[in-house]
Length: 89
Image (cartoon, rainbow, N blue to C red; front, top):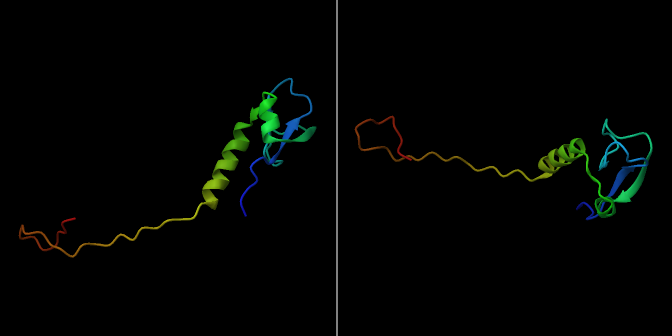
Protein backbone atom coordinates (compact mmCIF):
# COMPACT_ATOMS: atom_id res chain seq x y z
CA UNK A 1 0.00 0.00 0.00
CA UNK A 2 1.51 3.37 -0.95
CA UNK A 3 2.13 5.95 1.73
CA UNK A 4 -0.21 8.94 1.71
CA UNK A 5 1.09 12.06 0.02
CA UNK A 6 0.43 14.31 3.01
CA UNK A 7 0.69 12.13 6.12
CA UNK A 8 -0.06 13.39 9.58
CA UNK A 9 2.97 14.65 11.49
CA UNK A 10 3.38 15.62 15.13
CA UNK A 11 3.97 19.30 15.82
CA UNK A 12 5.07 20.52 19.26
CA UNK A 13 2.39 22.62 20.96
CA UNK A 14 5.07 25.12 21.99
CA UNK A 15 7.73 25.53 19.28
CA UNK A 16 9.93 28.03 21.13
CA UNK A 17 13.03 25.86 21.35
CA UNK A 18 12.97 23.83 18.14
CA UNK A 19 11.04 24.50 14.96
CA UNK A 20 10.72 20.84 13.92
CA UNK A 21 7.92 18.37 13.33
CA UNK A 22 8.12 14.65 14.01
CA UNK A 23 7.00 11.90 11.67
CA UNK A 24 7.08 9.15 14.28
CA UNK A 25 5.94 9.05 17.89
CA UNK A 26 8.86 6.74 18.70
CA UNK A 27 11.38 9.56 18.28
CA UNK A 28 13.16 10.18 21.60
CA UNK A 29 13.22 13.92 20.82
CA UNK A 30 9.43 14.27 20.51
CA UNK A 31 8.00 16.60 23.18
CA UNK A 32 5.27 15.46 25.56
CA UNK A 33 2.65 17.80 24.08
CA UNK A 34 2.11 17.61 20.32
CA UNK A 35 -0.75 18.19 17.92
CA UNK A 36 -1.41 16.37 14.64
CA UNK A 37 -1.03 18.33 11.42
CA UNK A 38 -0.41 17.56 7.76
CA UNK A 39 3.17 17.71 6.52
CA UNK A 40 2.40 20.54 4.09
CA UNK A 41 0.74 22.65 6.81
CA UNK A 42 3.74 22.12 9.09
CA UNK A 43 6.12 23.20 6.30
CA UNK A 44 3.99 26.27 5.56
CA UNK A 45 4.26 27.11 9.26
CA UNK A 46 8.04 27.22 8.97
CA UNK A 47 8.75 23.85 10.57
CA UNK A 48 11.23 21.29 9.24
CA UNK A 49 11.39 17.56 9.84
CA UNK A 50 13.32 16.36 12.86
CA UNK A 51 16.71 15.01 11.64
CA UNK A 52 16.28 11.80 13.61
CA UNK A 53 12.77 11.22 12.22
CA UNK A 54 14.09 11.90 8.72
CA UNK A 55 16.84 9.28 9.09
CA UNK A 56 14.37 6.74 10.45
CA UNK A 57 11.99 7.40 7.55
CA UNK A 58 14.77 7.07 4.95
CA UNK A 59 15.96 3.79 6.47
CA UNK A 60 12.40 2.45 6.40
CA UNK A 61 12.05 3.46 2.74
CA UNK A 62 15.31 1.70 1.89
CA UNK A 63 14.16 -1.47 3.64
CA UNK A 64 10.85 -1.39 1.75
CA UNK A 65 12.54 -1.09 -1.66
CA UNK A 66 12.49 -4.29 -3.71
CA UNK A 67 15.87 -5.95 -3.83
CA UNK A 68 17.46 -6.32 -7.24
CA UNK A 69 19.99 -9.09 -7.42
CA UNK A 70 22.17 -9.42 -10.44
CA UNK A 71 23.60 -12.83 -11.11
CA UNK A 72 27.33 -12.73 -11.50
CA UNK A 73 27.91 -15.19 -14.28
CA UNK A 74 31.49 -16.18 -14.83
CA UNK A 75 32.76 -16.21 -18.36
CA UNK A 76 34.14 -19.51 -19.54
CA UNK A 77 36.42 -17.88 -22.08
CA UNK A 78 40.04 -18.35 -21.15
CA UNK A 79 42.82 -16.05 -22.14
CA UNK A 80 45.23 -16.79 -24.91
CA UNK A 81 48.23 -16.08 -22.71
CA UNK A 82 48.82 -19.73 -21.92
CA UNK A 83 47.54 -19.56 -18.37
CA UNK A 84 44.46 -21.73 -18.18
CA UNK A 85 43.40 -20.64 -14.69
CA UNK A 86 42.76 -17.01 -15.65
CA UNK A 87 39.46 -15.73 -16.97
CA UNK A 88 39.22 -12.73 -19.27
CA UNK A 89 36.18 -10.63 -18.49
